[in-house]
Image 1 (cartoon, one colour):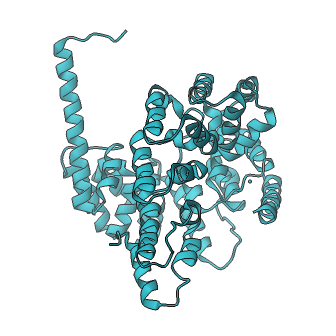
Image 2 (cartoon, rainbow, N blue to C red):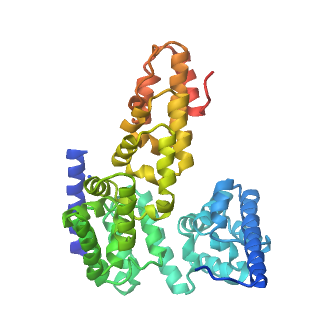
Image 3 (tube, rainbow, N blue to C red):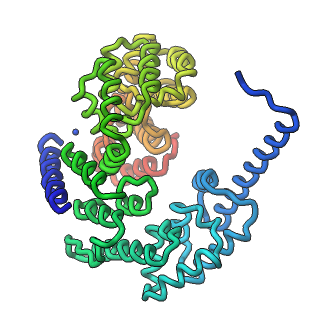
Length: 457
């Protein structure tokens, strides 16, 4: 394990150097059964609606977050969740702690406060955990509260605490005092990842994960070695994705996956380069892969162009299973907006991700750019990545600044290129169109438009 850690540190340093150098037939049911099913669905919706409403009113969650959580857990009355919240507050948890805990572990609200949660909190406090320490640790890793055995709970809690304390200290070294050789294999493995520099936000979910990617010894070390040799950075989520993929798949399965892609015309080297960009693409079935290929073909791309799109954006593989039945509508949307068929094909070639956008979103964004702003269709075709931009966070604020400048005659009569406005960082945009002016009042006005998202008049 030590050799793997040392090897991993060397690999990470090499990778950082590279980054600096290169800056990589339906069943028929009786009416009685159908009625029962409808009632069940209605009850389910009632529970989800109540849960979402409760989270908004009791914890101040946004409607969007509350609705997302209600898909994972639901209840139809507030007695149990209220007991859980009361218990947490009685142990010193503030609303900010509780919000973090429920966001990461919503099922906590369904646990029995007195018989399940209270004994665990009491046990941890009996071991000397202060209120501030307890609230901090459990806010970061609330799922350790689902551990039933005191001994295991104690080990996991202590491990998390030592990492948190080490990150607060000035020392970059982390020396764990737990008896790792006799401790759970998961802790030993997570410790190895910690020694490679993996941050808390990636490390702690692995510690309490039930996926098994950090269980055992031999399998974990073999997978870790492969991921490190490929040059994945342990400080990134892509490292975790790659580790999970290689841990879960046997050599035979991997060989079969690679073989599917090579039969389509990709080389083995191409496949592993795609793996480095998006590890989870390797989980796609042969059916999904061929279905994606056929979908791109229906879009008008030839084999070479499809393979190029795969290599450029492996995320698109498999995604089309949801869009395949609507592919004709997708094409028609672009054509109705004024794209020629050749322009549509060029857009897909340059930005395959656009196939993952809904027809409604494509229409909304294109009409905003072409009809409201005045850029030609060809500008969108040349810069199709703008279709992936957020309307609220990027398109509207930046375009409102441009509108304001043009209304003041500060940009002349010609609209700046779509590339200079939307295909750049916020800092570059502000430097180019806001901070360049010496007039402080003007700069303040433009910053207000940019940050407030107000449409200029």
